[in-house]
Length: 265
Image (spheres, rainbow, N blue to C red):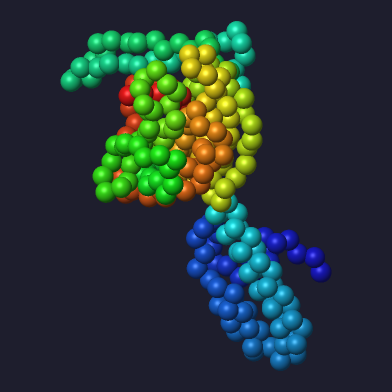
């Protein structure tokens, strides 16, 4: 006798199955089906085998759906390749205290071949990080050793930036631009993070290496970038400790574009 998985699960669950919300364990399923056949001695042996088989399949189905639910991210990062003849456009809108528009600044980027956008199923929460290893000490915005922005700008403004660490958040209708031409060297995963390693060809001071850590469940991206070699950028990124806060990250839709490049200030 052939039965669909949905039919087997239907014999063991009262209501619909929702991802991530299950209230019957394998043992409860076993006890329930055994109780249903206890009064029928003639079919007890056959029914017992069938019931235990149904319970086992239903339990496996629960396990599969649970794993699927945990594997689904609330946020998705898109890396958009921009042709040479395309100008990326966005706006920064200023409003007065009553919400009236007082100024619109058009933000146009013609020298870029890579932007980042997001699909979002929730609002991201703010996060802070604590560096566990640095090639040299720096400064940051934060308190008690936890930061939202941390940097070492070098000895003076005439040299390249050794490293810079910053957090960006996934919001709908927002895009990040990586100015100048960039080459993606590797796309991989580190635990829960989607990792992108790339080199950015900055015509003002030379190439910079970047490691981007995107978390698809919490909707934030940490950018580690600078003129130091890629191995150093990776070591900085791998030794960051991250804390997710209770409050949501601030987002103003009037500012629908931002720059991912490292910089001073």
